[in-house]
Figure 1: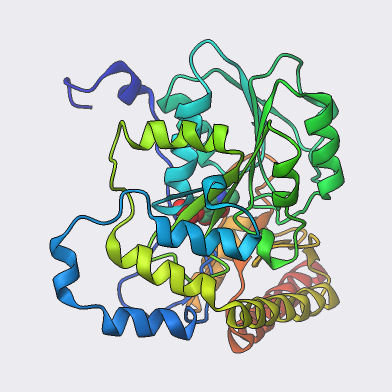
Figure 2: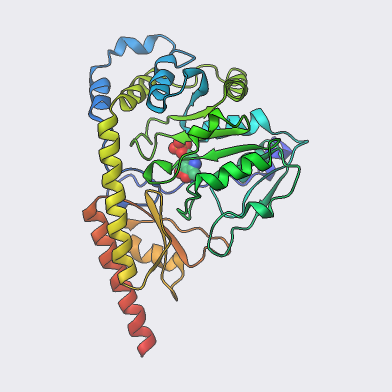
Length: 360
Ligand SMILES: Cc1ncc(COP(=O)(O)O)c(C=O)c1O
């Protein structure tokens, strides 16, 4: 490690993103991207954008985009914050609301960026185990927390929590800020955005990366009361006051304006997921009920790492997390129907090979 690194940087274990192969040889089901293109209006914006436009700084407040998001959800633009992907929004959120003197909590199995941010900003945190059925157990969270951060549906499990459970938490802990990361909620999860109007201790973070096919343009947003949004703006304006570039702002607004495309594409992903889950279960593969654009699957007797290698050798990338309790599992993002038929076929073959081995 370089001797000029700060003590904080020396102690970090950075987040490792899923592989992005350069040669297009693989069916990529390892980073929960969307197999379909963004809304047609997005392509139109990208094609027709005059090059001239890049000579000026973008709108620092991203007003047109925030208005388009606000229209979609039926809220006022003052309730919306936009950033470079929800990872940036989450980073601002950790900085805006939590400090060294606070304590926050999140589940032991969740999006692995949360502990990375907590360490980067020296925020003391505790992790609370998921229940045996993989659901979040709020009764196990200590008292006096400044914040609880959770992904709903959770990652990498895909398990969704009913909004009633989050509402009960908001009511029980009015002095705890509850940040709900709804990266995957568009695929059938229950969103708590409607609750933001009633609970000043709730902030919701969303991304365009998954349900709007925008992973490459980096647009995420938060919805919450203007008091909370101001906290994010204060951090943004103390760090980089022009966070979203002009191309991302224009293209993202076009995506929000095309409701029909959004819903039909989302329905297509959900239908593929449901078919895929049935196919795997028919082959004796364990799959958690998913509310996301991925499934979490386990083949009893075969380590997840082996499944990953087996599929990789056959041109398919999936994700495996080397963590206690997750060793038998892989996370598989939804591709097209043809992609998923291929994966289901290969996994069935793997199960047959395993059964052949045990029969010997
Ligand atoms: C739970 C969760 N939150 C946030 C993100 C970040 O999304 P992005 O930065 O692309 O908006 C991801 C990405 O995989 C995720 O899984």
